[in-house]
Amino acid sequence: MPQSRTLLLYLLLLASAVEVSQACEKTVRWANDPPYDIPDATQQVRGATSDLMREVLGRMGCKPRFVELPWARGLHNLKKGSLDILPGALITPERETFAYFSQPIHRSPNVLFMSRDAARRFAFNSLGQISHSNFRLGIQIDVTYSREYAELIKQADFKARTLPVSDRKGAWQMLSAGRLDGLIADEVTGLMELQQLGLNQRIVRSPLVVSEEPAVVAFSRKSLQPEFVEQFNAALAAVVADGSYARITQRYLPCTVAAVNLGCRVASSE
Image (cartoon, rainbow, N blue to C red; front, top):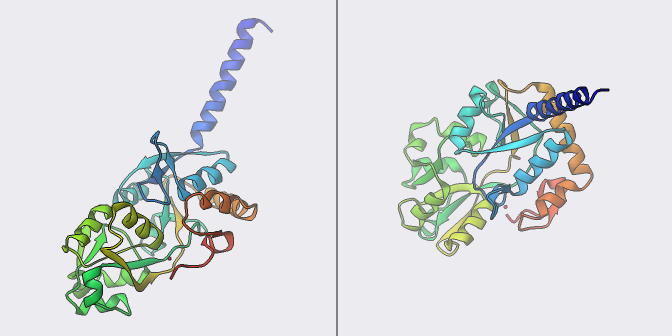
């Protein structure tokens, strides 16, 4: 075969390989949210979720392209199809209109954190009791903490007790300054952030568990097909079964990981 034809064939094969790789590059939302997504010293995204996404997508012959977005913007982009994948979601009827969902990827409860002063003044057995108090609850924009929360936020008396915040770390500072009384957060994330911010003596985890629903991965209905989600679930199941899930997440979680729990072996109740 003439050298020019050999070179042409090589270039065509290379272009085909690049095209296949690009075709299976999926955009994945991330934000600085330890221990799930963390920028390392080189600004590469690491963490229990981001490393898990690399492993699962890699087994599908795909690769993630991480896109840093606030939660509300991530949901918006997922809905319109400019974002493919949003990990860490809870399933709601409204989201099911624009997203497919995976099998669970993590289990860690959402709990109510309070300033130490508020913890002396308030004791709630349910989230709904906040409606009939003067408690000031910080809520992240477009975050659904539980099915109960999704219904409560539609009610005027509960909504009146809330203050939307765009950044959770800023909200912790508002609690510390007495501008908020409480904030709902993933237990592991909340405890780690408070430790990092030096606020773990001023803000405490209350006994109220808002939700123990597992986190799942949301997939855009506009950019992906149901078959992709089926393949993702199959790859995820293999990652859990062969021990890779525990190995990956153990690097980041401040507990002993059990694959059967998709998280900490014994809830810290985390």
